[in-house]
Image 1 (cartoon, rainbow, N blue to C red):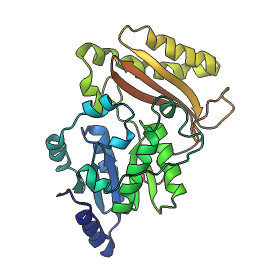
Image 2 (tube, rainbow, N blue to C red):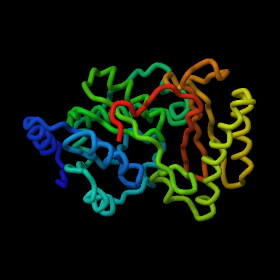
Image 3 (cartoon, rainbow, N blue to C red):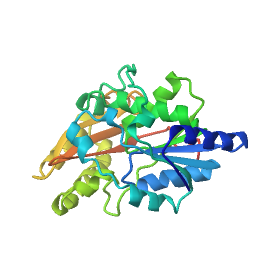
Image 4 (cartoon, rainbow, N blue to C red):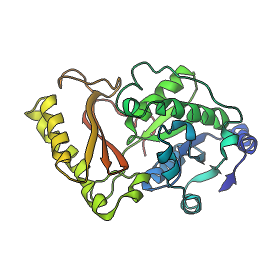
Length: 291
């Protein structure tokens, strides 16, 4: 595995591989890697010839300065983890390498970035689009891999790729969970022992709610999820929206869409956790690269 910190060197290395006819897979991360990230690297290795992984805590996507300051940075552990994977190039730049000039671009995603995460984290997805588009220009991957846990981010990346006419296949990776159901997240390490135990209530409630769609309407299911989680003294639901999986707009009934997803954000004190559950789906998000 080659570790690269300079954008010019990254472009040169990738260019050499592309000139040799090799396909490039790209997995962008902010580090603090876990098995969810590694599953994306594995998928990329199965689908492309050369896997590039970035580790970069992007300042433009944090609307809360404390969240940026507290985001875990574990580059030594991350490097060791990646050394045993399909990763061929690790790109770990400083901010001035990613943004040699201030990025003032403003993306218009219509209603996609106005709901859920976009409503509670203003400017977040514009920052995501800035950094991912910058990486796409540097890496020029054939395929890029993103986890479904960040469901709204995945929709934004797909929209941005289409908007900027990038010839890149966006491949989704399913949510990877702990044995007890908690969705893997870099933020989980910030949970206290009591919070970590209680956080399993999020996924457990989501899974239980799926059984209610046979007899309950959408409002009843949504109320069940919010009320059940909020009964915990350690957890507080910020939002729970049941939405069309393509438009991310709230649906009123189960027949309104063939692709319905419940998306949730929950605070455990100052630690913010997100998760989602697909209630109804004919759309195969993994069709472009099965592993």
